[in-house]
Amino acid sequence: MTVLDVVKWAFTAGVTISCARYAASGQMKHDFQIFKGLSALDWIKVVVLNLVVLTATLTGIVLAYTYGPTFLQWSWLTLFATKGEQGTNLNLAGASIPYFGIVFMILLILNFPRLARYEEEEFRDGTKNWLDAIPRSIKFGLWHCVVGVPLCAGILLAFPGLWFTRQYFRGGVERSTLYHATYNMILGGALLAYLVLANLHGSH
Image (cartoon, helix red, strand yellow):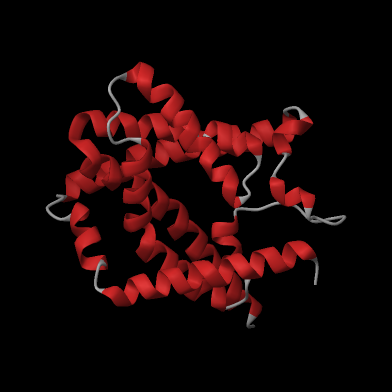
């Protein structure tokens, strides 16, 4: 077991305990109120628009990581990586554990509204105008580098940050949290589906 493995396991344990405690706290019902009252058309609009932003962001990250300067690949996790290892998003490290990864992702997805609200209150609440929004969104993107994403991802995550800011201007923290949580759920749902299929295939 490498040092990076220890970091991943420790972070996974912390995230799992936090998510499980939240799921048992009864607070989830309150946080999921952001989805209340949405019509089928509203759902389609929120999902499709977020999917477009998510696809553009992921494409930009892949291109920047693959073809950009080497420093854009940097993550603080590389300080602990041995040959052949790479940094990762520590929030998702638990997903790589066979079978447990499915439970882990379900818990994490249930926590997305809570986590999205925290970030919206931290980075969007009080934004005065677009001039104010730009540094806030850059800060929002780079904040993700704390959990080990490469620098190129941290920079380009400012793009969805601006997208959530647009929603904040249109409907405050409630609306930006709705879009942010849905954005995360699309990504998390895709990863969960992949894990289910991968584990089913591995069991045969």
